[in-house]
Amino acid sequence: MQPLIPAFASRHSARGFTPGEIMIVVVIIGLLAALAIPAIQRVQRAARDNRFASDLRVLAQAFETYSLENGHWPPNSGSGVVPTGMSGSLSTSFWQTKNSLGGSWNWDYNNFGILAAISTVNVAADDTEMRSIDAKIDDGNLSTGRFMQVASNRFSFILEN
Image (cartoon, rainbow, N blue to C red):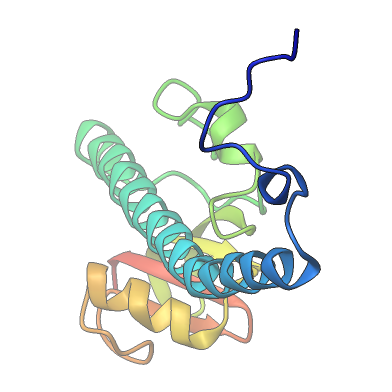
C-alpha cells in the first residue's frame, strides 16, 4: 500500500527556497532595518534629552527650596560632590553618577560670573543636541537665558545671576 500524499503536495514544493528568494528576503529585512534604526535613535535621543531636562528641573527645585529655607545658597562644590547641607535634599548616588548626557553634575556658587547655577560638565552631547535641550528648558540659544554654555564643555542652568 502506498502512503497517502495530499493532492497539493508535489516534489517541487519540497525543494525549499532558492538562493534568489533568500536574497530578496535579506534585502527587504536590510531595508526595513535601515529605515527603523534612525527612527529608534531619534526616539532614544529625545528620551535622553527629556530625562536631562526633567532632572534639571527637579534639581533646581531642590536648590531653590534649600535657599528659601536657609536664606542663602549652599557653598560651591566640586563636580559630583553633593554641596554641604544638600545631602537631605539630593540623592547622593544620583548626584554622583553620570547624568543622562554622560556628564557630571556640579553646583556652581559664585562661579563664571553667576551667583547660583546647576551645571553639567563633560557631556557626550553635541551643540545641536544641547540647543535642542535649551529649547525645551529656555530660549534655544546657549548664549542667552537661564540655560547657557558658560565654558567649552560646561552648561549651566542659572538659578540666580
